[in-house]
Length: 180
Image: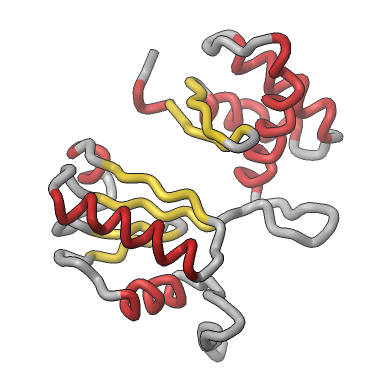
């Protein structure tokens, strides 16, 4: 089992870890991209079951979650116009008290702003290094790295969200569009 191909996905109200998901998606993108969700779910479920224990009673939920994650991987949107991609925030830091405080602050701000987001604290130094040279703590918002180096204020976190293209809330200004 390779730790580098371990992905956490949302399953109902919680999260589960899946080994080999990135490889399964890479293999499936050519053959399953244009298939119906039910077929995609069955095929992905069979692929990941080879390396993961998936209880029979939960296979339908796993199948739905795998389809959702596969569609996100492909950049597709839902039929109702909702975007599959959700706000992803990672706090990069070795696990010091300042990093833990930043995780708590980000979670508090997301709740206050009513923004659904997955918030993850990355403490593995090799994984942190994969984002380039950053002085911890740093934030990664939807894949974009924002060096902090210290505890950012609420205003700075909101600015980071806006810079990452996230519309923060109706009572706050939407990010300004750049003229192309």
